[in-house]
Structure formats: structure tokens, C-alpha cells
Length: 522
Image (cartoon, rainbow, N blue to C red; front, top):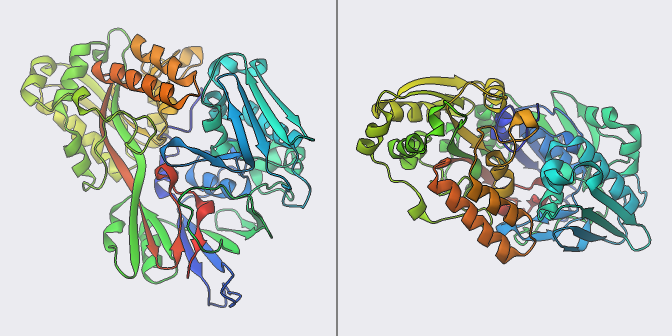
């Protein structure tokens, strides 16, 4: 079965934990140079261990954090979807051809030059082994329908697709497409997955110590200057050393933050209430999970009836759903949040809460509702179930663990009627892949067998162009079709809250913390 990392299934616990970062510049354990120029040592605490060190195989937040530091992508993606330089300094892209020019003087962590042909080899590894590659090159361009070539003399990499696909740059900016140097590829996939391979890193750090399940130490590469150039990149120095420690839970991280053992920690749970923005801490929030209701629309299922889907929209309140999590999230107007490029913010497309109208269509209707219990024990799922029961539906709630939810909802002909879908990407193309194309039995991602032709046509139009205006225009039409048909009922985000002590700064382009932007400012 194919599962995408862009939904919060089996990896949502790791995603919710994310990371906690600490800077220490004066202790014996983490010495500073004392010259005011060093970044010192930064400690990073996480609540889950690494599952794979191969960027193409990343499946959880800890994987993404470490591999993003070891393996730099060709591009970064900034606020509003704008692309910024990474290992590539410039690029041109059409729906069938993308050419990137590498920065001059790129090297690997063993000092060997990083050439265009090595970049091609890394991208071929990504294409062959990563689930995310399906949405980087387009499903219609699988196998030999995508050609990747390199010119070492010119320092260029060219990607050509047989079928128009306008999302190549977005895919190349993802962590999974981080570039692995020749030493890593020569070592083989098994070695890459098990740990850092000497000379494999193209990113700003190389791993120098690893104790699985306990801690990892990464060291800044001397004179590294290929950091992605985000617009909000803070001033200051990158840490000389990153020490990544595995902690038990967010309460432990909060304790360490309050006792100054940590300087930065993200929280998705109630421990964030211990902190307020003041002279000691700053609290910043960003979407972690985008929640919406989706339906199994196969024949015989209640979700196949447009009247039932509309009635469910009448029964629930996105504002009430948000309050279940303390009201700290953002009420959504589409299946991605407002920080996403081209997202619809047209509230007229949304169906107002109307319990009386809901009862007319839902009284006596049996609904099997399934959701993940990874966040707050599945409190959001319970709210939706009670709202539907209040409207007269007979609801059987499966408040499942991550693995069960992922299996049940993504399985061919899964036995479910509606689900509170937890999406961890803010990208319209990636999130929209769950409502278009073939079902899992035919190798697709359309888990609910949605057959919205208006959405499908405009999804193709949006993903087949590289013109920003045309892309957004098509996305507006696509979301219009999806929302009017009630194929998706937007709810609210569950946010991650970054609590930082003075002296730590970082960027969150597009609402996502990019760890390589972390700087020590004091």
C-alpha cells in the first residue's frame, strides 16, 4: 500500500512532538569560544527517535530535522510559495522542463566537489525510493517519462517530463529531495538509513556522534555558505554544534525550558500554557495539522449522498472544533490554512452551522466516523461525533491510534464513512491529491473515491502550469468545486507553539520551522 508522508497518519505523533532546541554558551558541557563570534552549542530535544537517516525515506519529525541539516535541497520555499536559492543559485521552469544552475564551489562534507552529475544521481535515488517523488515529478511522469540530466562543466541540472507538471520546484524544495553526495550513494540505501555516512552530507552540518534512542551530535561544516536564502532569515551565528537529545514527552521539555536546560521548545499540548511572551520568552505559533472532514463516497455509503455531506457541514462548527483545543488554532476556509499559496479565503463557499437543517437529513443515518487520537486523545473526533449525534445521526466513533487510522482510511474499500482528516502539509497540490485520481486499489491516493470532475479538471490545470497567476486562478476554481460539493468540510488547525528564550532566533517560512535557519543572537 502506498502512503504519503503528507497526511498525519502513523507519523503524526512525531510531527506533533517536533523538536526542542537549546543554546548553551557557558557551561563545561557546551563551551563557547568566548569571542562573540561563535554560535556555541545548541541542544535539541525530541520526543521520538529517528526512523531513517535517508532523506528520501523520512517518516517523522525527527527524521526531517536531522536529514534537513545533513542534506541540503536545491531550493527553499518561502512565504507565499516563493522559491529561494539553496544549492541552486538560479533556475528556470516550464510545465515540462526545469533547469537549475548550481552555486559555484559546492562541496560535500569530506571536501570533495559536489557536481551536477552527483546531484542527478541523488535525485534519481529520490525518484526511485521516495513516496514524495510521486508529487514532485507527477504521477503521469513515473519511470522513464521523467529524464534528469546534468552538465558538470556548466553546473546545471535539467529535469524533463513527458506530461506537463508545474510542481517540480515545490518538490525539489522538500526535505525528502535533499541532496546526498556520492559517498552516501555509494554506501547504499541500507547504510544511509542506519546512520550518517562519512562524506555524504551536502548540508550545513555533519554528524559526529550517534547513540540511537539517546542522542546525536552534529557539527557545523567550516565555511559552509550554501544556506537557503529565506527572506526572514535572522541575523546571528549558526550553532557550532547541535546536540540532539531524545526526551520522553512535552512536559519534560517544558521543565527543561524553565530550568534553562533548553532555550527553544515547540509544544502542541497544554504545556505551552506555562509560557507567555515577556522579557524571558517569546511564543510563536504556526499550523501543525490542518483538520477537515472527508467522506468515503463509494456506492452505498452515506457520504455518497451530497445531501448527507451538506447536512454534516450544517451539524458541525469549525469554531467549536477549534475551542476543543483551547482556541489556539486557526479556523480554516479550505483544506489547507491561510498561510498556503493560492488558498481560498472565500467564506461564502462555506456552509453555516445550522443544527435544524442538519436534522432534516441526518436523523437515523448511520455513520462510521474514524479519526486519529494522536492529538489530545482524539478530542476533536469526539466533538464531531457528538455534533452529528445531536443532529440525529447514529454514530459509531473509532477513535483510533495512528497506525490503525492510517490503515483503515487508506485501505482499499476501507470500512469507514467519514473521517477527521489530519493533514500536515500546507500545499494545495499535495493535499489535493487525496481527492483526485485513482483509488488505492489502482495505485492512487483518492482514499474516499471522490469523483468531483470540476475539482479534477482544475487540479490538472493548476498543476500543469508554472505561471503563478494562472496557477492561483485554477486553484481558486478547484477549491470552489470541492467546497460547494461538500467533499471537504474545513475545521481548524492544531498549532505548534514555539517557545524561545532570548538569544535564539529562527525563521518559519510558510509557517514551517526550518531548523537550518536557527541562529544564536546573544
